[in-house]
Image (cartoon, rainbow, N blue to C red; front, side, top):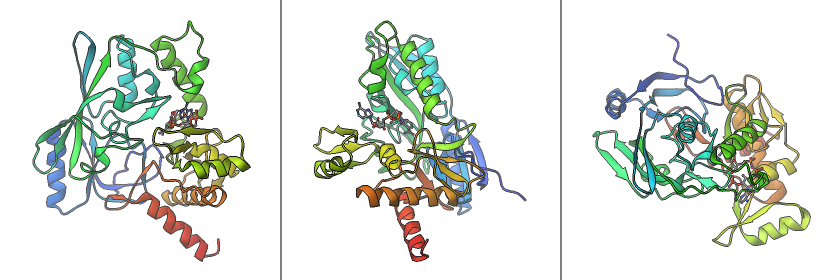
Length: 350
Ligand code: NAP
């Protein structure tokens, strides 16, 4: 009997033994317990964005489709209680339509609301952590709901990638949007917005249009968004690179380190549009790896490994994937896989 496909924005043909849909926290826990009893691997998935399945999954994939948006308010804020299975972009659209502002810079980010806290999604100078009030998680073995007030959010990082990575699922997210709204135009490209065109709706439309120009729509061209994180390096290394590349964009961080744009480094290696098997570096934004033509998971892995190696050779900067890699039995160490693949290629002399 053929196995069901797994939803993934890379558009890869990967399957699982079972794919089930859960609309309540109890359903998520029930499916989890059944898989554990059968001694099978099990994982909870949102919409399959930011995720690379490196091979077929040998167990059950539970699609988290807990819905609902409940709105409350205080004198100062709108309070949103949102099911983890709601689409992030639909939530942003709805809030703007209702006159509840703040999320407009985070428009068009693929994925579900429940995935947003995990990597503390961010774009155009704004991060999820600025709006989160709490995150409700369920302990899958017991059904106990735990409310997390401090998600220890960092750059594409949170407590949900560490302490609460295994054995828990995010079921609801609480957001707080200030009624006294101020536009956030700190990010370079937004500064070009005309003074009379700075409503939340204007920013939302602008962000949607630039994302549509630069980033491939996963429905048309499979991809997982930014493949690598922007690296944080010591100022000495940034200075050294700047000696050879005076135009390098650098962003000083409060901790004294320097953020470099991973896409810029990849582009300077001449890899924009570079193709390997069915996978390619996106022509408009080198930070995105696309499924250009019937890519196999291994095409994406090999290309990512090659990109990482080239950037390391040219700049002595070692990129780390932002995308999470899922193997046959669960999450695997993405950086380690890319390093192993590069070693294999070198030992084969390719
Ligand atoms: P971009 O404007 O071409 O800039 C390249 C990189 O430089 C960005 O990644 C950004 O880092 C950094 N940067 C630019 N201006 C900055 C500033 N004023 N202060 C600090 N850092 C700055 O980037 P893009 O590819 O078009 O993306 C635009 C925004 O959407 C970025 O915020 C990016 O993170 C976000 N985005 C995220 C994904 C994803 O899958 N995670 C995919 C596409 C776009 P930051 O990434 O730290 O902002």
